[in-house]
Length: 246
Image 1: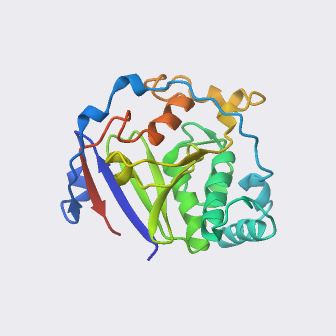
Image 2: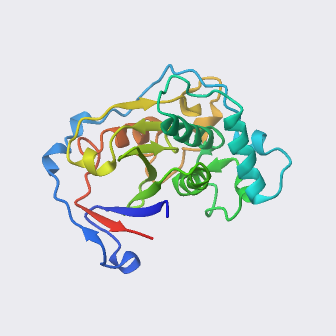
């Protein structure tokens, strides 16, 4: 089994859904959540890699597993992330990257049931991004787990590279060398913000889908991206971590 699901709980969590088994409670310091650390605007000069969108790689294929195989073969036939010496991390970065660039961020409706349904959409949120990223990771034989903030604010994928978990967040296209629990404890982190359509001046439509959400300021791309990197420092810090193994 390569799949594990976690729930990061804040002041309000969901015991009726997840039950009380396998809980691992962790105390964190609320003093670390200092508002002056909120960088509401983050910019990036990162240039896009020559990675095609999922829709282009899948082409006219209609079979679910065949679509996944096309994506796998596409990676095998190209030399992406060749500056990364770890081959497993290199493949995992690809899974994150290609999922991120294939949809603009926004409410695309309920989580899609199939690849065909998903690829036909123009918008995607973290739940759908995580679902299809994880299916690629399973094909690449990379152990993964799904982390969810119980408030519903965000969810992401962590993958086990060697003997440690790292964050590969396809919503924001950011890699962090620590898992969320270490970030909550204030552990130093190394991270890389890869190219995102959010910051591409030639794609203003990539930011249009953010407007009109519940709290527009909270859902601006720069804010969402900055939150995760600052988890445990300026992010709204959860109090407990509930571990669910499925």
